[in-house]
Image 1 (tube, rainbow, N blue to C red):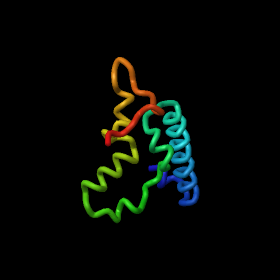
Image 2: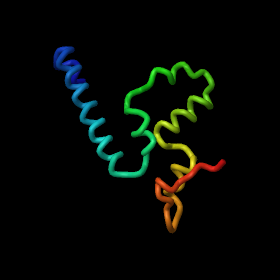
Image 3: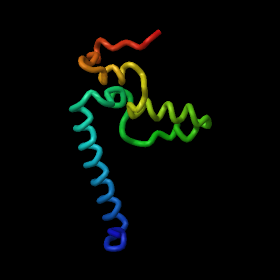
Image 4: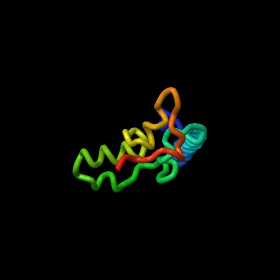
Length: 95
């Protein structure tokens, strides 16, 4: 709707500003938690074009899950253990 009330350059500047603010907020929230620690180390918020090149859906889904820490690797699930979570620097993947 905003697009109808202002020029294209003004609209694009507004969209970019809103996106920038969202990403800054998201990065601040991510840095306050252990969730998505791998994501912040290896990637940024933007869509990666190489995901379009992966034709095998299971591989694309697995890679996308890794990118956003929605996977079941021990480095992620170790922090869920109760009563004592496994510290990040002590977590190890099974061999």
